[in-house]
Length: 384
Image (cartoon, rainbow, N blue to C red; front, top):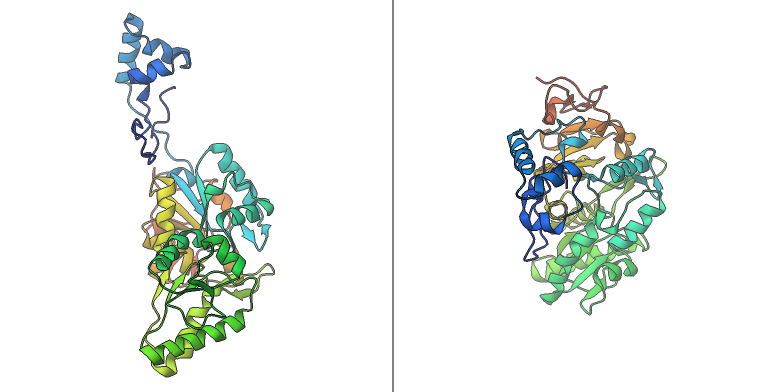
């Protein structure tokens, strides 16, 4: 109604026949919109849209002559169209919000900047995860802000079932049925005698040791009988994650290295694993589709999942030194180097990661990051 924002909005994907695709600062000039929104324009703009008046023509000409000015970004958050947050270790620890996490989301809610919670948690549907995070005190406005590994894996698993492949899941029955529904070819991995595909969900609500032993035997039997092994679809791809008291806990995807080690004496080839959750590309592609843009910043505490996954998908990434980093300094190689390193989430707003001499975000390894040390003490530094 006023000609703002200068940058417009991303292309709409709704597909409606009369959708104009993109909202820009100049849409007030469209005659159909002038007629539809008559009476709602502010006075200075209303005079410009009234046809046939000298003042309207003069004002329109004056507006046309003004340069399109964009407010230079002031903070790191300003550089991106949307922000992606990891859940565990960044926003929550188990079922409690980490200090400052609720305030950051509340600030984004107030500013209207889009954000999404990108999580490998696969203990239920996105509605269940939404309720869990809300219960932890995070003011997430709607369930569509949750992008979960289980939700992303759902389509792929249904494809396997439609192809009449036997699918087993590592996780609780309630979790599997909530995400995938019930299907005659979908069974729990700790009881199924054979399967073509193993889906790794979560490590809650079932006997992990018993399931691992049974899966190992199933893989070994298939290898001996057919020379092949089942494929794996990893929803939750976490191998480790931090617990509430700061100690380390094995994640559900530890089953992959365990199986590979256990089958090595039988000459097993590498197990084929398809990653739906981080660091797989699928979950980041879902984020890009929901946001309608690839100008996204991923904030995470794990390099092997959050940072490497985002970088492989062509996104910028910020490593926050909470969560897993509290267990010790993480060593990285150049493929895992984040674009930014922060001690807390407040730094995406306070300007400390945003050099004032540059209108854009400074690229990556120049912000105080070294291959063996990680971040410097200041969290950022000069380039060169």
